Amino acid sequence: MAMSSALTDLYRYPIVQAPMAGGASCPQLAATVSEAGGLGFLAAGYKTPEAMYEEIKQLRGLTGRHFGVNLFMPQPSNADTAAVGAYRARLTGEAAWYETPLGDPDAGTDDAYDAKLAVLLDNPVPVVSFTFGCPTRAVLDAFAQAGTRTIVTVTSPVEAQTAQWAGADAVCVQGVEAGGHQGTYSNDPAVDGMGAGLGLLSLITLVREYVQIPIIAAGGIMRGSQIASALAAGAVAAQMGTAFLVCPESGANALHKQAMTDPLFGRTELTRAFSGRPARGLVNRFMREHGPHAPAAYPQLHHMTSGLRKAAAKAGDPQGMALWAGQGHRLARELPAARLVETLAVELDAARSELGRQSQRGAVS
Image (cartoon, rainbow, N blue to C red):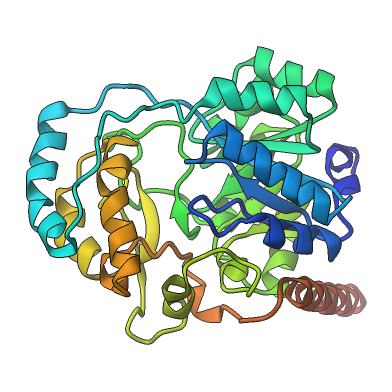
């Protein structure tokens, strides 16, 4: 299809390693995925522009293949200060337990967006993706002029349409099954209530009715057969985070990796407990105790709980960590990233062949 040509030259296999902020998506993981034939991604979220630039330099030293960098969009400064204050008071016991102070909720809402844009326009990379909103047409046009392809994360047909109108080259359609933060444009409980998102296959089908640009599918994908289903529904590639999080090249904390298949953490939920935005993670003590009381205040709550999460990890306590994970986390395989890409590609080919045989049998009958 012509609409897919904007992306298909970026990879051998339609496998995109999701940008996972917080350390998992390090240069080693992204380079290995790209070298193996997928599309590796760095996560610039929560990093300084200087740190982002250094990681890009490291990645370029490891591979000459295509890769991407993900940016967080600036957030409105409209959090309910009283609600944030009440949540802070609620967490004083956690601060005492982990012997670390709570962070400053007013540490900033733009994640150094403009400075990161300047770095990426001065030193263009193959792909830049955006989460938590849609850039302006001027920004997307500037990247197009620099030779950089752009992808906007969306969770609804309307968001996808907005991205197409703004000039994005593609959309990453994120189903409710996805681990980590839901990439919704807004953070309004009245508009996008917790768990109200659509499942991936339904969302792909709906978005195809609204846009003509390529669709990357994200949300709960752990096997090649699921990639085949997403492609059959209209996507051109599948983005996978949880599947790559447990790879040895991933920079995720060892406790986080172990929790993926630990029977103690049997299910996932969406929560605002750690960041103030809906995010899917393994249900643990912190989520159970504080999730119901967390206000819609991002990134204020992220800043506030950052030290707590680091202290919990240092103490070896996964019950106080943000264990982001998709609904398919129990299917995680501790394979080297290159072998995982190859395994997924083989599974994808087998699934496509089986679909072809079923289609032929149906035509004959």
